[in-house]
Length: 242
Image (tube, rainbow, N blue to C red):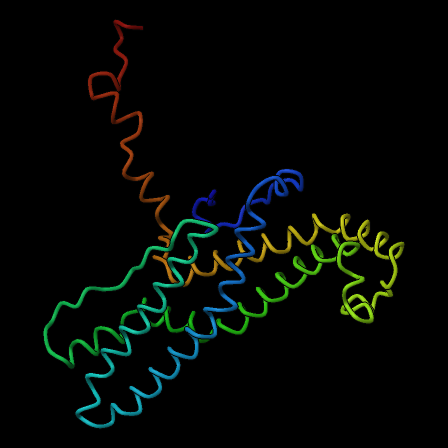
């Protein structure tokens, strides 16, 4: 399975021929479809656990539950990090270590950790937009593929099934629909691969380690440059050398 390099920058998509010859449409389909199954479960589980634990934290005995809630958020986010390995490099976590002992310090450290808050935002706040994105792209792609092979199955569905709205109820019409669908395959292929790339890029941006905006400047400053490499004896040309 071929995966893309770090997709923090989406970059350009390959040509239609290259894309259709690769495994990307299929791995992208698996990535999107798996979110349609895992996303609602992770959203519901995370939401219920966090809400219940915070509600019970009003009592002294409920405070330790907040540590468990943070652990649940991290585990659910780790599932999403690992799942990006289907289409790109898996996301690397960036959680702070717990330095001070004690329950209250543990609660404070976990729920002031930006990584935990980003995990929660991804699992809950971004759930609906990502679900809609994945569902639409996957629906377009699978519908297109189904119409491509319509002559093989249209007759087996009563009243044309889903193709009835397109008027596909005989073989000539099914063949015409197949030709049109074949022309649309590159477009829907771009849709499913582009949606997977966008989804994985969002996962890297939210669940991964924040990029350092000064990284390039730090690299340039750390480089000694040609003047430093030349040495003091070679930096000045003497009159005799002239």
